[in-house]
Image (cartoon, rainbow, N blue to C red; front, side, top):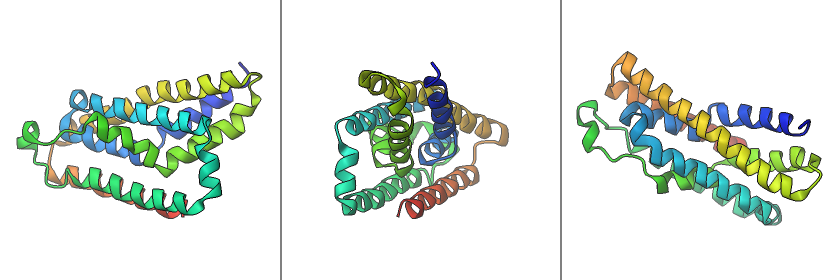
Amino acid sequence: MEQYLPLWAFIVLMVGTPGPANLLMMSAGAQHGFRDCVPFGLGLISGKFLLNLAMVIGLGTLLTLYPLLGSVLAYFSALYMSWLALRGWNARPERANSQIKPSFYEGLLVHPLNPKAWMMTTLAFSQFGAGFEQPWQRYILIPLSFAVAQSILHSAWCVAGSALSASLGSSLALNRSLIVITLATVLWALVWSS
């Protein structure tokens, strides 16, 4: 338990802070409401879970051996997340039902392409995972802890977007403001990872 509490604190701080996934959830929540964003949120959780499993089988080592692959991944990530955010640029509140809603499959790709997610996963396994007595503990507890934290915190960001839209009034200006903040975060993550 003494190893698990610091890991959980780390995960809550990392998953709960603003990043591309949370801001995409907030923007989607403002545009579509919480219920329509559930598939996207499940995709985010599943994608992070798959990233954790990939790290367990050695993907981090592969990227260490081939740093160019990591750079290509970072740029592709920035393009993909920017595309996801910009899809709502002209989203009009009066046509919310006819707009393309974020899907499970779109969410599935966010974390595997997110430099912040890679950093979180790497630190969780290297700094906290080594403290567990049995390897199976780190391979089960770390991915499941991320999944639980994501289900709560990504949902909270989506609800915050919905609440923001409800309190300020759903508008094109609000959508575009959230998109600009998301793009700035994606750009920051790209610069930080380079």
